[in-house]
Length: 138
Image (cartoon, rainbow, N blue to C red):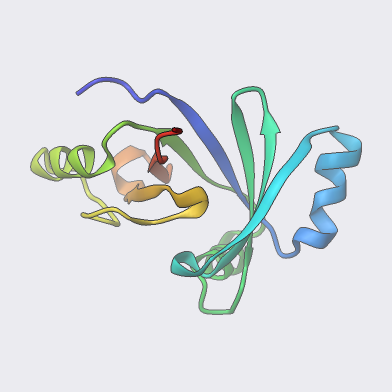
């Protein structure tokens, strides 16, 4: 299995995009490249460009959102690191065969039309990793 292509984004859990975005855009000078509702994860996300990667701010849409539960338990802050990969389904299958604990054994829909899957934090010393496969540009 080859290495991931790059860090796609770093996910940061926040209580409010409206209150948080000005720090990233005005104080840090990052470009807001878009916002999106991701129903499958019950979040409103904002993507900010930094080099070839992004910062992904994640605001929960409900108290039942995994991000709301994360914030309740740990507070706002870094939630996950996402890797850009070529074939998320194959990678998840291989990791499962290797006994790596997964949150998703099959890919699901994510932001920007990506297929995503999360590895369980137990697999990586408490770090939550996401694998992202983005649609090929035509």
